Length: 350
Image 1 (cartoon, one colour):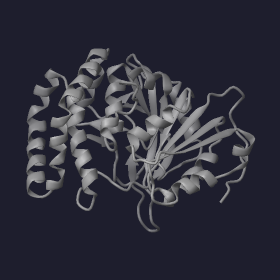
Image 2 (tube, rainbow, N blue to C red):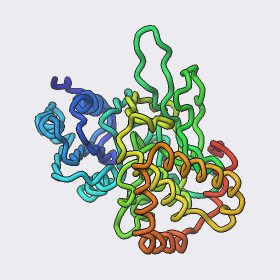
Image 3 (cartoon, one colour):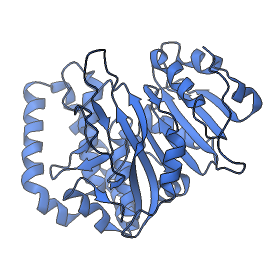
């Protein structure tokens, strides 16, 4: 279906926003995602779709998608079929390399943006983050699709940390009763639908990588959040920007998930701490992290032996892990920004 033309509401000279989508067997969701993008009033837009070796019609759908704004040049579309699965991190990095836009929106194919999502995030990006530091990212209020007769549930209202070194989406799976209605500072935004200032992304890149490619998929958005906070870049939450996210994998859903996904998730849990945990934080959080680590090891030994490869991967790549850690730690300018998020889920803007 070709979306109807919509007159852009932004003024001449508005900043270009690059929307980056990484697809992997997303044919069922992609058309609705693209239609919601075209319905956004902001122009100009760059639409960069990177496919990681899908076995379905994802590439064909992306290439065939058309609308008046694409023909007029108000939206510029690129489709890249990589022919290999570089994961969300590698696919996004490839997409970033195709654009010089000052703002980049990372978007999952299973997300349908609400009206004015981009306009509202851009407006919030111009507001001070408070307590020093520039705004580096802005995220919105994501909800899950609801069936008739069922209560709508929240999906993500910004990300927060726990003393177990878990990173969780605020409001995840809660019934939507209008909570999280105030704009706040949060630790990070989900990679499913977060707007980043390109200058911030370039500032925190490691070896030219914006998303850490050793993560491949899962937890890479949290890892980027640590680097942004460590360099003094704030992430804001804008509740007026709404979107629907049909999340396929969530917290606590290890059973029934592909072994490779569980193995990657376990590996990435430790990579987060190797890259970002300070010595002081190690001792302050040890009672919580140690108990979680022991439970994870017991689970893997008794019920999920397919994930043992995560520990082997960490050992084989230990030198590169520590090299990256040294680089990240040496470039930190605001370590206190990270520590504060282990004590609170959000902070006021001012």
